[in-house]
Length: 212
View 1: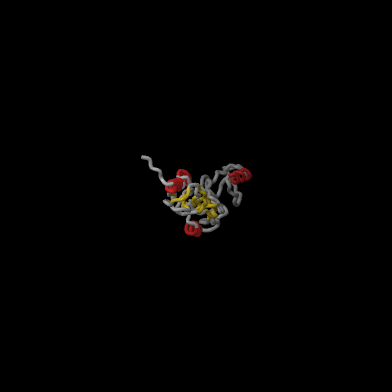
View 2 (view 1 turned 135 degrees about the vertical axis):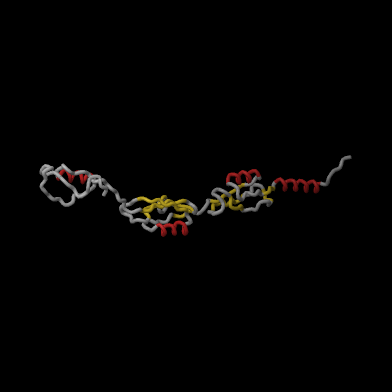
């Protein structure tokens, strides 16, 4: 037995089929990496466009939000706008050179929310306990949580040298030896001696090998 359907019923079924094949469900891509999100949208026959935004929570290159909520039915090839995280906002590192350690820490730790490491070194021009420089340098773009090395002055380094034995050298020779050791000639006096030749050193104010 053959049965012929009315023309209008056949048309209705065809329209329903076309409607269902032209629609798709929006996948949930929030919190996923940009690469993964693009693949998921492509698999769902959807397109995407990116917008960037800083975030203290969502890692860099991961999706913060999507313009159409997951689970909604939309036309295929609909463009979904993805808000992509650029990570924590970057700001120029403040200049703390010349400040005390405590002052620098307050600015870097409290104001810029950075981690700080202290390194101490001698310096002939910067007073003790003052900041010499930072690494990275002031003005460099940094993000909250970055680690900054602060170089702090220990003041001038006191260097010790052993006093050379100047006995039996002429005054000129003795002065050259002192100069080579970074020492200066003090008061020069003369005296008679039965043990030393004329014109040579027979005694000195600091004993040989004394550290000064």
